[in-house]
Amino acid sequence: MKTIGVLTSGGDAPGMNAAIRAVVRTAIFNNMKVLGVKRGYNGLIHGEIDEMDVASVGDIVHRGGTILRTARCQEFKTPEGQKMALDMINHFGIEGMVVIGGDGSFRGAQVLSRMGVPSVAIPGTIDNDIACSDFSIGFDTAVNTVLDAINKIRDTITSHGRANIIQVMGRNAGDIALYAGVGGGAENIIVPEIPFDVDDICNRLLEGKKRGKLSQIIVLAEGVGNASEFAKIIEAKTGIEIRETILGHIQRGGNPTSFDRILASRMGAHAVGLLRDGIGNRVVCIRNNSIIDEDIEKALSMTKEFDKELYALSKVLSI
Ligand code: ADP
Ligand code: F6P
Image (cartoon, rainbow, N blue to C red):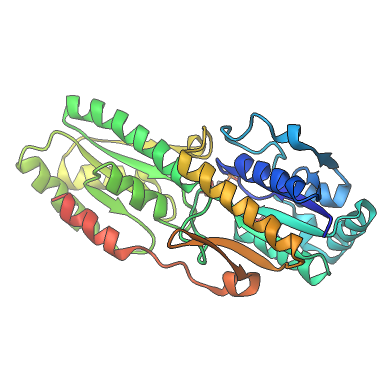
């Protein structure tokens, strides 16, 4: 394969730029041409496509967001949109595609592969909800952003002797809540994967207060519900003064951590290696610190394992 395309799709994630850089530079190193597609599948349909050279990805390894921009594209879910994209791919001479995004974007890569354009998907989402991969690009940075917020909130609530419920992103996954909760020493972590009991949470807060805890933090995954509603219920049941914090899109931005930059670099290079060898319809994953790849169909049918051991540990450490 001599000419490949690369796009980012779905929600952006810190480290996507490092992945784009790795794709472009690995391809050029292997004497391949790379075309950058703007705004996800929209750019494929409407021909927003430009060649990327070595310099085009300079000065981006450390930047959040995605220089290719990103989008959600309903049109690409239709046969008409897919046909337009295929025509454009043929027009530009693209022989294979790298798609960086979440599982929705992977379905798009699967469609491209089925249409005869070998495509390789790279997990880029802060949610860490890609079942075949231990980690996705952007997750570690998002967790560190939440940790920074927890540290700051801890300062003020300690001064006031309050509790705070911090709502974090993750869509239907509780990984951001779990990792940030354990790292931040949260007293309670509420995630969609584990059933919870509000009375149990209230009892733990009351116990903590009894033994003199000056601050108590509850990390709530957005997939469970809204922080304001939880705050009202908990304050009414315990009498403990509680504030809520909804961190929102701050979790999607910022300079990627070293972990995300290195993960993105390894995954981008692996994706190009597959296409160079004419292999498509794969998802690049990291498992036990090895970069491997999986059939897209199989990857999409897998269920993400929630780390119940880490969750159990959080309960022990927050007594
Ligand atoms: P993410 O990739 O973060 O999971 P989405 O689920 O919004 O985000 O998907 C991103 C884009 O991938 C969609 O807007 C659409 O363009 C494409 N996509 C999603 N599902 C399909 C599908 N079944 N067929 C073709 N394209 C799809
Ligand atoms: O998938 C990434 C994510 O940030 C989720 O955690 C969140 O639920 C969603 O995207 C927010 O989407 P939007 O950027 O469309 O508000």
